[in-house]
Length: 438
Image 1 (cartoon, rainbow, N blue to C red):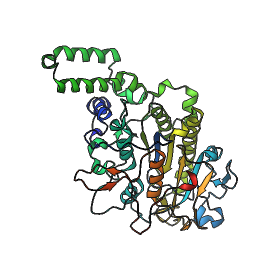
Image 2: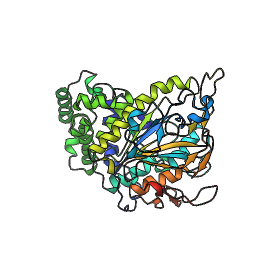
Image 3: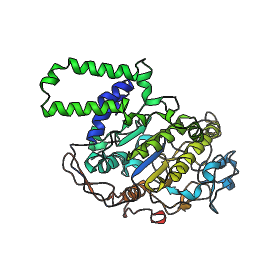
Image 4: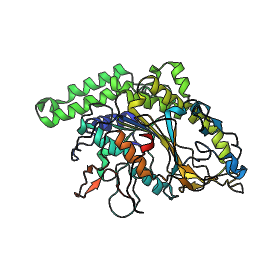
């Protein structure tokens, strides 16, 4: 939630987490029962700033240095005919577990507007402010749909994107809970208690003292409103001291598992996401900054790509080994790509700018077929060559795999007839799904 950033972790948990967990987005019109779907959860790896398609999953070495830069030796994957960037060797070993979309397009080059399009499927403009995918999934998979977890149904690791309102017209109850902190640190969420020198025993003693002093609460013990506050308090404390809070304590993981993901913030966020999926959380976003590389793009990529390769490959492999990949969608991508032509001149010194004409995404698990490529860009990665895919198509495909009807009606505060995802584009034509990989 936006207003949690100024609070300590302990205050945020006590003040908000349990209420969100209990309510989901209670108060909104209950959604229609979804049809059965293979997927139960989504882990969205939001590559904040826009990753270059040429330098990740759509390499173009034949285009020459002005396009591929120093990345002129893409590597083969374990799927014949699919090559990816040479700095992604671990992901190359498991290409059979994910599908690559190489023909995404929306033509928008602004961070805020492109983020909105990619996560809602709609073009910004007058009219409703639509909710993003996380808010939609939390509506259909949250408390009103039977979610019983104490952890909020929509979690962001670790900071909100800040590009647009994730909840849109669904309101504050549909906003994600952003954890803050750094999961690469030893204690992460429970650090909020430990760092202040407050042991678990002392925290419980303080709680007992507050209860003894609460004469009003004792006198009104039979009141339904007081009982509801008590339940919220119990859930909040469970997020700190109980089993629910332990999911955020990565020190419980074996060291070799933590090493496999990489000790970076991103790697440990991927591990945290796996733990949240195990707890049944429907939607987890990993906000992964550092990809808005207008200047010195290639030195930045030499740092970011190996980090991404290790964490993302470990996540997909770990989910697969634990029998969770079939029920968990991993969605990698950003708001757009980056210019295919490298900007060598000063002040960019080998940079890439925003590019919404053609870019890429990756989908794994949740019923999506791996080892496939959808669409293609042209020889320089400048235009869609075949099978253009609008972000709305990706969203409708994800909702379908989750058992959420893309044409279901959303509860709008003014009673407008608003559907989960657009059925047609402004440019005309119906919006389908990614049948090739479903």
